[in-house]
Amino acid sequence: MTLAQTGALSLHGPDSSARKVRMRNVVKDYDTLVGRKRVLDGISFDVAQGEKIAVLGRNGSGKSTLVRIIGGVEHPTRGSVERGLFMSWPLGFGGGLEGAMSGMDNIRFISRIYGKSASDIHAFVDDFAELGRQLYIPVVNYSSGMRMRLSFALTLAIDFECFLIDEVLAVGDQRFHQKCFDALFVKRRECAMILVSHDMNMIRGFCNKALVLKSGRGRVFEDLELALSIYASL
Image 1 (tube, rainbow, N blue to C red):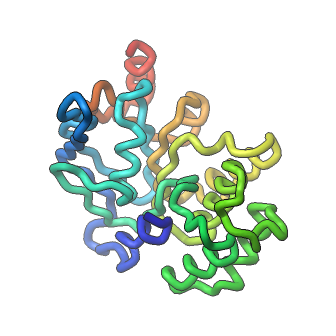
Image 2 (image 1 turned 90 degrees about the horizontal axis):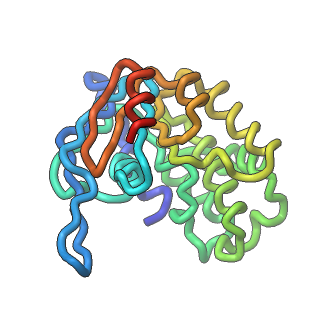
């Protein structure tokens, strides 16, 4: 699945009467060699325009699966996801790039899907990702860091209302890390965000509530400090 296909669920525009992302009683099961495994079990939460929710949980608690379902990369086994905000694909989802195409071809494709100027998107991505002539070679030849730079820049090039973020701000060196941070949390501070992170300072600085996951079950806390204390005790 490409980045454009993950975002296509939002292409037709949000319902102006429902300016929220809503997840209701979402269950996700996988078939494994040892039987059916439930990764998410009855997850529900809302994110309104401008809100920022942290998703907290230890490894294996279902955080990344949750993000993929919200972004449309995977579908829930049961339950529903309503996207009332124009939502990004999971930020840094480098696996969604079309590897046989060059970075420039991926830019043109995203531009067509979202009805944007290819020259404008190219100018933004070229400046932000700092890949230079590497944009003209197939993405399959990129390092993982180059893929992340390209997908991060492509995501920011579209005016999304809600960003899905799964621990991607460690991309590149410290200077590029700061560039990503400023682009997302300073320039786009009015956007809604669903943030998976272990950075407690970032969560305290930007989130107003948290979903705490444990073994696939989850609870939303409006009291952020209480959520962090519960997460610390898991």
